[in-house]
Length: 168
Image (cartoon, rainbow, N blue to C red; front, side):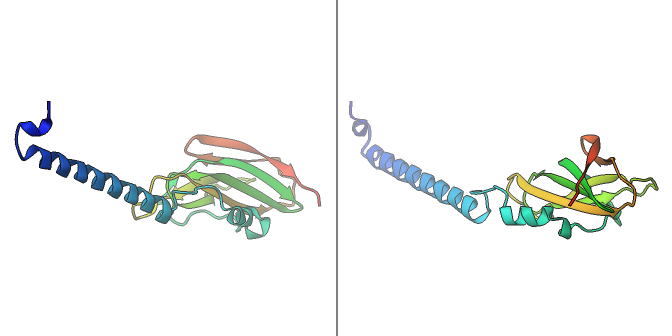
C-alpha cells in the first residue's frame, strides 16, 4: 500500500518531516560540538604545568584563616603533608563539580598546635558546564618542632594527615 495514496499532501508532509528531523539532528550535533570545544568539556585532564606549579612548595602561601566564610562551603579532597626543616606544607588534591570554583585550605581559628585546617570552596557566580575540574592547593606554616600529623576538615569529616619528614 502506498502512503501517498491517502492524500496528495501526505508525500509532501513526509518529506517536510524528514527534512525537519535532519535539520534538528544537525543543529543538535553542532551545539554539542560547540559545548565540547568552547566550554572546555572535550579535555578535562589536569593541565600538568598548572598542577606542577600548584604543588611546587615555593608557591604555597602562609596558612591563614578565611576572613569571612560567607558563601564558602566545605569541599572534598585527598590530603598529604610534608615537613622540610622548619616548614610544614599541607596539600589538597581533588576535583570541583564545575570549572571556576575558588578552592582554599584555611587555617581554623582555634589556637592549637599544630594548627588545624579546613578545605573550602566557593562556587562560581555564573553557570558553568558540569565537568569535574581537577585542583591542587597547598599552604605552609612554620614549626621548629617535628610535626607528625595535622588535621584537615572537609565535607566528609576530619582527616588525620601524617606529615612526611623530607630531608634534603
